[in-house]
Amino acid sequence: MLSLIRFLGFALLLACSNLFAQPLLEVEQAAAALSAGELQALDIRSPELYQASHIPGAISAPYGRWRGPANNPGQLLSPQEFEELVQELGLTPEQHILVYSTGDDETDFGAAARVYWSLKYLGFTNLSVLNGGFKYWAQHNNTEQTIQQLPASQTRIQLQPELAISTNELLDKITRQQGDFQLFDSRPPAFFEGTVKAPTARVSGTIAGAQNLPFQQWFNANDTRIRPAAEIRQLVEQQQLTGAAETLSFCNTGHWAATNWFVLSELAGLDNVRLYPGSMAEWTQNPAALPMSNTPGRWQQIKAKFQQLVQ
Image 1 (cartoon, rainbow, N blue to C red):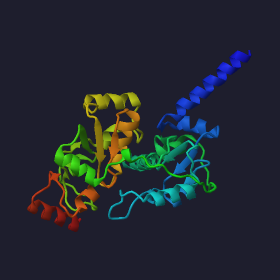
Image 2 (cartoon, rainbow, N blue to C red):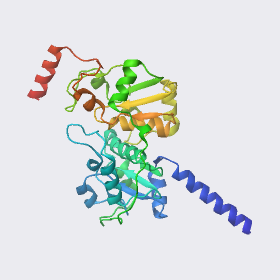
Image 3 (cartoon, rainbow, N blue to C red):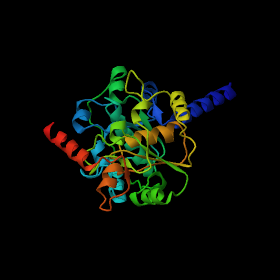
Image 4 (spheres, one colour):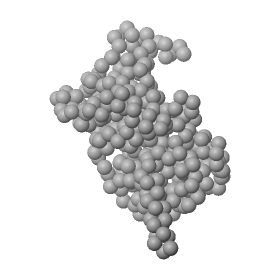
């Protein structure tokens, strides 16, 4: 009997370990782990939404606090700013952190993916994103309004610079054709083709040498959850995305690109997937006029600008 008890205990521990290793948790999995005290939920919605209702035990860590200035929202905070933030929030490497946002649409998932990436960049390893976000949680589980706050921590971050690529390194790779890499523009085709421009980009088009890999394809057709892992892997294989030694992901401000990074790195299991945090905002604002593709002619730029003004 004692041996059976030990075996069952080991099996339970193994099951928990497998759960902790999952970067994407369904609400049923998250609810069970939260009830057992095995998760620390991180609500990255606005403070107003958090105060109105949130997952029991969740602390508030609005997405904007993880982002850069208005002209370059994808810009990384300084190491000191990141460390002060995680200490203020009371985050520690021992916690299993569950990141969630609203779940209102596919774009929203990028916020959770970007915070997940940021925490991994800071050296956290026990991380998950809630599939479907708060919207899907609230359809199936209880919520609370009690404001939660953890004691400040003494966590010292340990940067993982290999997860990010800088403007200079990316430029060097493009101009020298350095290494076996694939560069993916995560935006919808209209951005990639240069017919639509984000406000933070000075010119439309895409980074020279990029291929278009729109982020929306990873989601279920009938809701805002990421597709099952088997479907993800099938899509990755069909599009022949596994051959390069290194994969680089960008968008307008490193938001949609975080979704592609998350799917390719954490779900499809590709090695050496890196995020360009500043993305098109940083690339096009560079005074050196960095290499671009699909940039419209002068008349097309004037026409697009006029259309933006009259809308």
